[in-house]
Image (cartoon, rainbow, N blue to C red; front, side, top):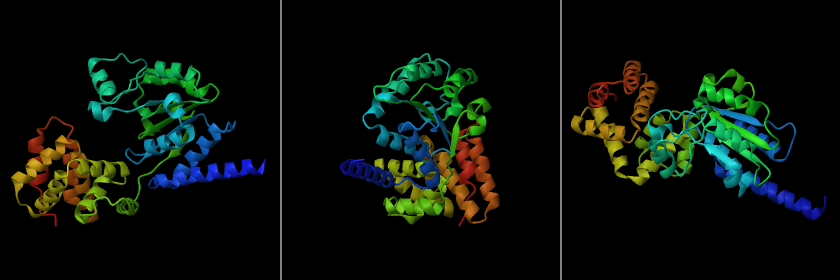
Length: 330
């Protein structure tokens, strides 16, 4: 190789590693290195490269983020044209967003998935057809979030696609519950396992990003709420940045719940947290507090309260009797 070409290759390699380090994903370094290696092999045309990858691990730990960042870096401008991402909109729909054999859009689906997010819902037949189309660049990628959402008939229709992929096609998926996958699907994939991060790693990341620097009490609550999931901590920070009053609500709520004072304020604050969709995470934070302080009975009560959230019990009564009337923790 010519000296100039070697120099250019070295610069490109150094810049690639610099970008990867700069992304500063927290935890799971070995798993991310494995993912990076497999993607580099695939895009380099290595015949040993897997053509179906599943990244497995709990929700909100950075699986999708790390996949997307690596694909953006490698694919460049072709990231927009040659990547089909099938997002999980369960949270936005407030119900499970299943992966079906064929999707027939409804007014609700159009409003939630297209208008708000500029996203077109797709069924497995649409995905299979997309993989058969020619790429604008050299490679065609399908990225499926939470592949366990796939209904049985869709999974069966997907088997041949993931078993005998066309050349220069890559299927990459995430799952937060691999035991829900058909064994026939799982056996055709190379699986990379991600784990939750430690409280120490999360705290160090939050400190380096200057997150919750004004209140150590709130920072510790968010660490407890996150339960090893950086995505939850980031979501909490973004919400408070957008609405600063939430920070005061949280700090006052922690104090009032701990001292058994201002119950009406606590009740209103908990209802507000519920409306934001973060009540379960808040209860996780209180459970974490109980575990760290050897308060097993209170921890079990909060766990029971969390399980009742998805039942038909009136939420106001649940907040009052499940959380507010069980105080004096400190």
